[in-house]
Length: 390
Ligand code: PMP
Image 1 (cartoon, protein in one colour):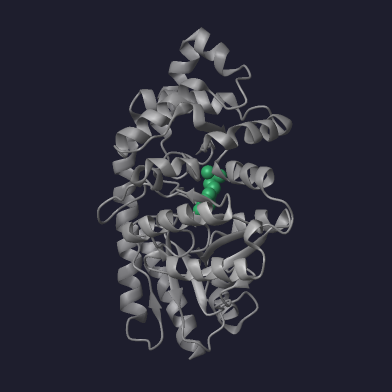
Image 2 (cartoon, rainbow, N blue to C red):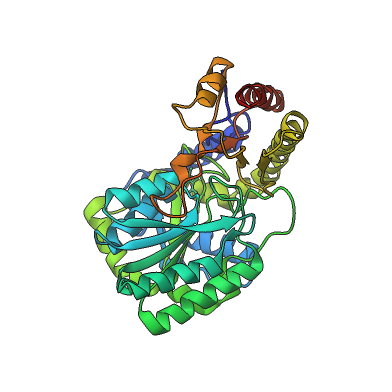
């Protein structure tokens, strides 16, 4: 079975040697080991928070990440959950690209929030459409229930698109104006894939485009994709006024995420192991992405109505099939694909329940786990299944 479904990172390039070296250094330093084995603060290790801020500001020179505004969590998913749990009441509204990251959508629905989908394309969220949706909600008397715009800003999961520079400016502008006229709307910028760029120029993060926006933008990051999801350290850089409520919720949850992981990541950064690891994984993923795009062109390039996005990074390619073809898990296509031994994520999972209509003729393909040969093989099987439907 060839899985093009799981969004895991590449097993073959996990940083085994670097992790082993850093663990040995920690174990050889008794006071560091003792510290690592102890609880730390609710916000998380001050040293790691400083390192993240420095690292962030070094990579995005106009950035204003401040260690005192960073909350460390067990993966960015925990931070997103914390944010939602702290700030949302049932019935509150979060606007997101359609399609969007389905795990977070589940979290939001689980706490009774409404997720409304906004049209998006290769350049990410369509900000004109977002403005229309906001105005529509205001006309319905719901302006005070709209709490956040959630954006997977770079190489998003699932569609692989990146919010373009003009749209970043437009989004900051729109939310800034909305805040003046209607109240405290925020942008939750999920940067899970930010460091996985394989083609094109990197773009400034939202708070580095407009430092004032750090009053209403939450930048969310993780080492899961850039280093290791097993160590599971993520973070959020939050506006000052959110720190108190986030901290209070976190102290009720766990009064601090696992400190040993934080010390390990601190060692990884200090030893330069993260900076060394990034070129290796970028080269590997670039080859895999190119293999997937080539295979799609070869196998499906001449099939009418089939098209896909060309991401510049991340782990996903978003495939759209002709209108009549259903790709959901009880469809003929799914059956035919599994019989041919290939798995994918049906795109319909990723559409918010409200807003843009669900497009069941869509598929999320992941290229992180399979080898280049596995990717070509998987796409051949999938193409055969698609052709059998037409
Ligand atoms: N955001 C997005 C968009 C993701 O795809 C993921 C992982 N699949 C996460 C956040 C969470 O990653 P982690 O909790 O491991 O940091």
